[in-house]
Length: 315
Image (cartoon, rainbow, N blue to C red; front, side, top):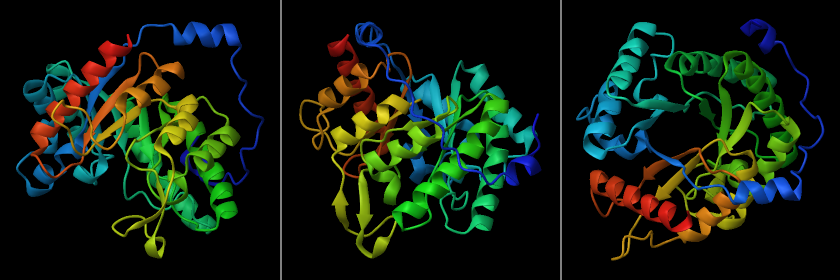
């Protein structure tokens, strides 16, 4: 296995050729497959309860199964930030998941530094921070880690830095058997075309995307990542379509529901037709309720019901 030091010292860009487009007959076959995605639960849905201490991160898999009937979970590093190399702790988490028949799907890595910084030393430090989470994901038997491509404001610089860091992480992930996936999660990464271009250039089976329906604002006031008004919003349907060819998971964001249980700010049937037509038929779709008009537990249940309804309608 290649050492971390060898990875850190890599500086070349991953600029190999574009991915091959599937033949039409193969694409038709993919579209005609049954649409049997598996519903998972993103830990962020319960962030208020976790931050307050009402819920212990170690019990998250148990809660997912017992309270919501969901047998797959997506962890967030904010709730166990210092445990990436604590394998006793990770073993406890894994045992609780295994004991309740829960699959650990992925780890969402936050506060891992700026993978897309114009400063090479900053990028290398950030890449190194992510290595330990790839190792933790391997231990937990997750298929992926989700990373953020934040850093440079200049588009050309951001693109080059993103290709460099993501390519290096994908090679490390390949050796661990863990994919490295990028969510549209602020700034340039929330522009579907720009993020798709990065994945096309990296051109690795071990690099992918995690399309999130609710994160297509690619420019905010003051160039902030969060918490300021959006001044440039990418089309969520076009963005989802562009990211799905590289997707290794989907983040089903919800905010509000109408009286029929549909998400009131977006067309879920239209979104999932795009997902089905991409050939993503048997992967994980993670519930990520972020509304504040109803309690989290109710939002999770409504999102689950919506996903079940959409899956049945499109099968």
